[in-house]
Image (cartoon, rainbow, N blue to C red; front, side, top):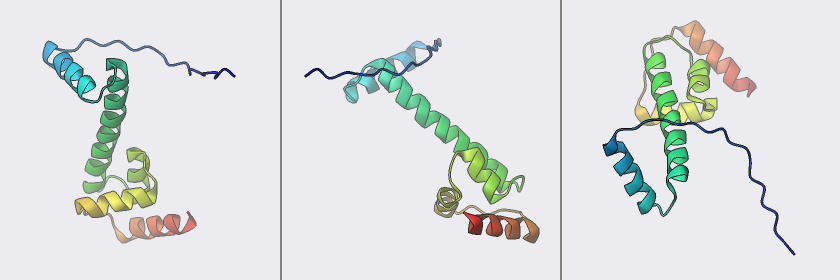
Length: 109
């Protein structure tokens, strides 16, 4: 029997990076025993998740967004967002109406 391997289409993205970043990329790829492309994909995925979370935290802390909106911005479920908020000791300037709305929405989930 032969195993059939399906390779999903992935668009190609190219970027110029400083020599120091390229050296670090090569070092991390070697450390993880991976090729550079795999390491770049992992770094990009983790970096984008970090950027989304950071943006959501800033917006939530400033009172610009509710719990539900912060979770959406971070790419997390409301439960995951609440865990993150608890771990980071986040506080908000939201008023009682916003908090009531968030509590009702969370109850619907």
